[in-house]
Image (tube, rainbow, N blue to C red):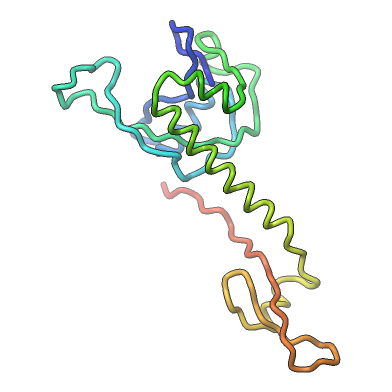
Length: 181
């Protein structure tokens, strides 16, 4: 979390996005400018929240309505010097402490969704650890088997039990998609 200028409380890095950038690019930029961190952004938002601009608090006016997107970021680099360092400090907290310090309800909702994302990712990692590597390269396996799902294929074993098939798991390696510009 980062401090707010002229306040004593902490918030998540946030801000508006420029006309020439995507909302995901803006999230990365704000994390860099406000907290001095870089990392891998989860492209799926934790949520989208509607709120009023601080400068346009009139509830009867359509002006000042804002939409905020919150993303999780796996921090891979923590900078010693960053653009808003003179106005903000960053503080690393565990989830429970961060939850207690959240100034707004939408921040608590984002943390709850973040915890769900993290628990789902941990389940995937555990499953991936259990799967054993293939005895031969994936192209060779694909050439001699019938694909039965996106992650499994059936192949005939070459043992003395001719005609017996084995179901073999394999991992697809798909290049990461780059945003269109």
